[in-house]
Length: 451
Image 1 (cartoon, rainbow, N blue to C red):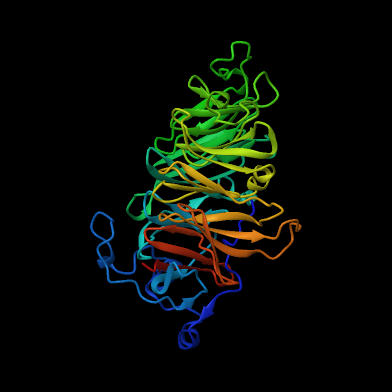
Image 2 (image 1 turned 120 degrees about the horizontal axis):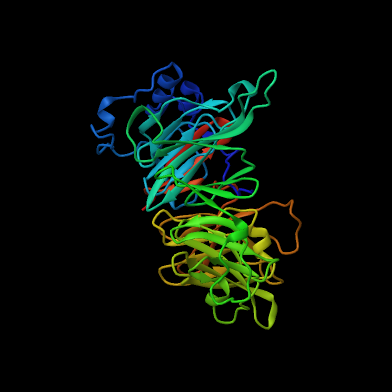
């Protein structure tokens, strides 16, 4: 998937003295913790940094990070933290934390969970190994959120039981952690193994595994496996002539989200509860809806617009009952472009961005910024709890390879504000901090909100 501006490659500027002394930003408390881990110790930098239950004690105001990026004015670069970082940050919005997984694309690794406000380590998992390290099988990881809680999943697949005679069998091994754990060398809360997997993907509220004829959903809270036969999914309510069957797209609080475009029904639905044709907003064509999960509670949907082939209707929908929370009129081709991006949900659950659209589910409205003869397309990335959405513009009619310019949108008003060229876009925003990944320096930098 395309990540618009979520990597800061050429923007890292060092404070002159700090750069000379510490190699461009080293020497802070977080780096001390990293040094200890590399030397074989999993302990935190100081016992005073954590309460007995593993929660963070009240700490001194954040210091000025040595790495100074050109950030949007909504951030105060004089207050924050930074630390060495490996791979993509795993954002834990319900935990006000961010996790590092050192085993991404490697046969071994561990989770390190860091407080988003202070940069201090909350807990570290025990070392994890891939299911078949001898075959150089690589590990993957993800954040899963269900029941209002965050969970971390690490998994790998490989052939086990193979010898000179036996072929062995392909096995998927999954380790699940509660993101609000505490301690050092924390073991998985659950370990799950599944034979002969074909595909693994993130299903918002569950880890999804495709088998030959079935789909398995792994509940991160319990490790329970639920199996679905796509050919036997109950058809949408109100479609008496529909045959069973479809594809399982994700798992929500209401159950699986099913979809089909080639059976008797063109759209998506939650079996036994509601269907996209029944919840279509005013002015939308009921048939032919598309969907993308945002969380275990919210979906984004798109319908064609009646009488206007150049426009579509987008909406944020409750997974539980199909209620439309917010909607907007968007361009004809925006959904295809949006599929290359990731839906973003603010940490407080109020604001959503996806592709060219932003929504305020509390006010019930949204805004779209498509490519038109009079305006430039805006593709959105991150969104804050205050309804500030970071995006990039592209001149109308230009090709895919072009210089993008950063812009900040106030979702509550729809007002757009251009940002200075080269402005860094945060990887995440939570706990009153913007988190920036400086990939070329292997560092994660956090700046506090300016107000």
